[in-house]
Image (cartoon, rainbow, N blue to C red; front, side, top):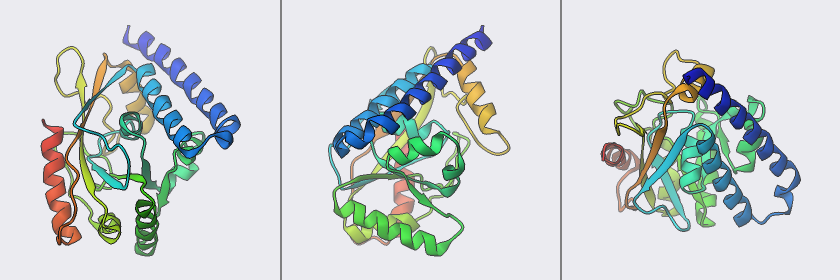
Length: 245
């Protein structure tokens, strides 16, 4: 039964991706930025439904920018989950540019790309993010830099927080968790870590019983004189508490 369920979900997911690409190609150029953001958020929420995931939001998502969202990173699903809760512009690794279909959807969502191995590119990204924050945009990063196992969190990298410091913009911590809908226990089906393949993680998610994606928004905060490293550690502790709340 789980394989039959997975095949049905996969067909719905592929159809939804193709429909999204059609909207991006034919309708996006005629939409205002606000309308584009609304479309991305609605598409992401529908995508979760197609793969058997229900969204649950706690706390208050930002109504408007400027704000930098910082969240823990568990799965390939984290970006659509956060888009479904509140549209935001993500900073993602440049490898995504080479992913067929996904790259076009990411571009439509306003994704920033960074070469993580390049300190010079990190500096460029900080300047670009700061400019976006000064124009009241909502941005999002995963400061762990890669997906964790969902049990513990990796250390936060502080570099991109400099954008919020430079723009004097607030940072809002966000905790992410996936739960089995029936039992309420943490679900590791969507995890994507270590030697796992992306396709393997997707297939495991499609086979899983219904899942709840929990997004917990904390309170926005300013640096208030803290350097980015000290602030990063405190934000990590806050995110850790939110994801376990």
